[in-house]
Length: 280
Image 1: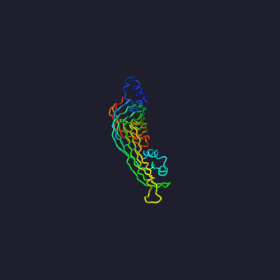
Image 2: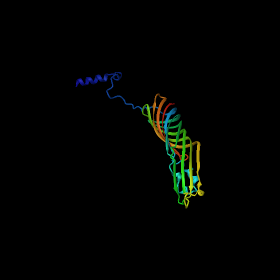
Image 3: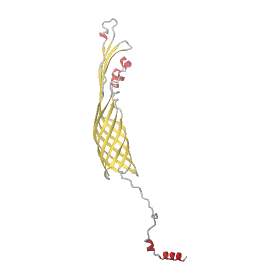
């Protein structure tokens, strides 16, 4: 008992300064939580880019109105429907391009939401494959029509602008993102059809087989074209940005653009971009 009292007395004699000099017991430090630090992607940015894409144009409907209108009053049109004969097919062409982008990012911890304008100048020039047809057919009124149908069409897409929203995720020096947007393009289109069509009336007492006095030639050519016409579409895609420095970044992305039809030509574009940008 005496030894215990002596030990307690020695502890009580320690000064506050001496007690402060004693090491803290393990695990007794005060824990102060720190706020998470996220890489900075917010702000205004701009840059330049190189692109390469595949342009696909379906010309199968381009010849329809060019045949239907001139033939609309004839039995030949009502029974044969030459506008529905597939004279043109689809074509795919690849081309490179150069352009730029400008936009702004809003950051919510690791979530990124951005709005961007994107521009590409290129030269996608597609020509329709041609499948002419020649036939002889007897109509319900007893006449015979010999006809040869042919067509051609082209579409050229040169300038593409987009307004697109971006949805990204901050992951260190990288930011993967998805895009969705509206697109506008400047296009030149042209289509031409020709009908070498002769109506023959069978002779009741051959020869000859047909009455030459009843021959009717209703051959014609018809065309349409538009220069620097604007087409509209929607786009979707995704990509990845890489922060090379706090303000300089590289990016790579891909997108699909579905265009509105023009002169009965339906088209879409698959395009990839490589870019370098500066963020403020």
